[in-house]
Image 1: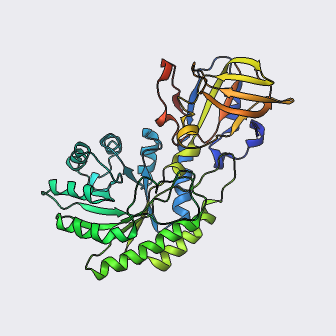
Image 2 (image 1 turned 180 degrees about the horizontal axis):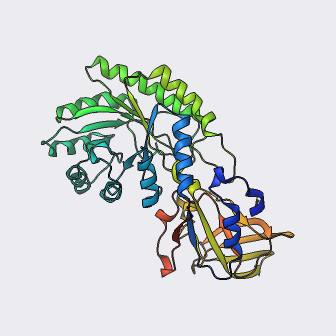
Amino acid sequence: MTHAVSLSALEGRESSFGLQSGYYRELFHQPVQDSPLLLLSRSQVGRNYEALKSAMPRVDIHYAVKPNNHSVILHEVYKRGGNFDVCSAGEINLVLKTGVDPGSLIHSHPIKSIGEFDQAVESGVEMFVVDNPAEVDKLTRYTDKKLKILIRYRVHLNTQAVVNLQYKFGCTTDEVLPLAKKVIQCGHEVYGLCFHIGSQCVYAENYVTAIKAASRLIHQLADNGISVRLLDIGGGFPIEYVEPVPDIAEFAQPINRALDRWIAQSIRVISEPGRFIAGSAVTLLCSVVGKAYRDGKMWYYLDDGLYSTFSGIVFDHCQYPVVNDRSGEELLSVLAGPTCDSFDVMYDGLMMPEHEIGDRIMFTSTGAYCAVSGSGFNELRRPVYHIID
C-alpha cells in the first residue's frame, strides 16, 4: 500500500526533486490552469550534472539522450561541458543543435540498420558500439575513414538493476578478443570497451565487477597488440522515487576505487547517465477530471495516464511519488488515466485524502522514460512542457 505525500512534507527538499514549494503551491490553487503540464527545472538539471561530476571526477559525462531529449536539458548539459550518447539519426540531429562536435559523440546502440549507420557516419559521428560479428561486418562499408569502435560486453551479476540492460545486449568476455580482431580486419580501430549493467541500479558492486572484467580484457587485448584507450561504464545511477537510494557521492566511492585500482590513468573513462540527469528535473501536474466510488475505493480519473507520461510505470517499472495539497482522513484510492481502456490504471491501493473534480495532483521525478515513451492513444491531449527557471 502506498501513501500520497503532502506538498508541505516536501518543502525544503528542492535539491532532491527540483521542487520550489511556493511556486507549486500556487499551481495547486490557480482557478484556471491548463493541465497536464510537465514542469522542467533547468537549475535541477544543472545540480544533477554537477553532483555526478563531483562524485566521479575522473569520469567524463556523455548524457544519454534517450530518457529525455528536451532541448533545455541538452543545452544545459552542453553548457556545463558535457557531451552526448546517441542511439539514432534523430538523436544526432537534436544534439548537433547545441553546437557539439559530432566527432565527440558516442553512438551506443549495438544494433544499427544500414540506413541509420550510414546517416550517423555522414553526420560526422566516429565512435560506435558493437557486440556481435554481424554488426562488425557492417563496418566494411566505410572505407573513407577509420571509425573508433567500442566493444560492449556483459558480466554475470548476482543482483540486477530494475531495468536489466544486459539481457538484450553485450557479448561474453570470451567473445571480446575475436570481435576485436575482426574489427581490425575490417580496417577500423578498437578504441575501447563498454558495458551497461542496467538502469536504476542500487548495487555499486555491479559496476565494480564489470570494471574488474574490463581490466582483465584490457590486459588480454594488450597481449595481442591491441591498445584500449577508453572505457565506458554506462549509466544507470539510481535516483529517489518512492524508496530512498544511496547519495551519489556515497554510491560512487567503490566505483572510483575500482577505477583507480584496475584501470590505468592513461585510459579515458566516460559514463552515459540519463535518468540521473533528467529524472528529478521534471514534475508532472495533473487534474482530477472524474470521480467515482467503486468496490470500496475512491476512483479518481486524471487527465494523464499510462498511455502518456505514466508510460514509465509500464516500460521503466517505476512508481512516482504522489504529491497532493489536501488534508483530512486518508481513503483507499485508485488513480486512473483518461483513456477508455481499463488497463489505464496507475495506482491501485493508494491512501490519500478525498479529492474533488478539478483538484490538482503532482508526480515528482517524471523526467526520465516518461514523456518520450508515451503515445497519442485516443487522441487525448499530451502534456506540454513549461520551463520554470
